[in-house]
Image 1 (cartoon, rainbow, N blue to C red):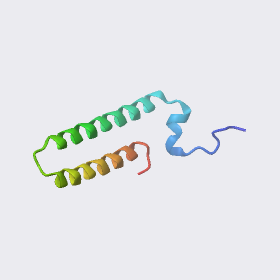
Image 2 (image 1 turned 135 degrees about the vertical axis):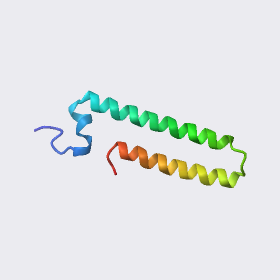
Image 3 (image 1 turned 60 degrees about the horizontal axis):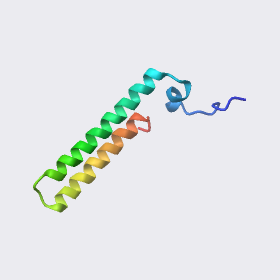
Length: 75
């Protein structure tokens, strides 16, 4: 009996060892994460009040999490 008999189709490239697809997805996730960090840093440097910064930070984090979930095929 194979251990991966009940695998999810979305994670098939990771399980079957398709290194090109895996590397591409990992690079995309890394770039997205770095862009999120850069945008959050730049927001922190803006000369606006704390409440507005907090709202913009939350919006950036939500958009970032949604884009990261897209790469692991949740959406």
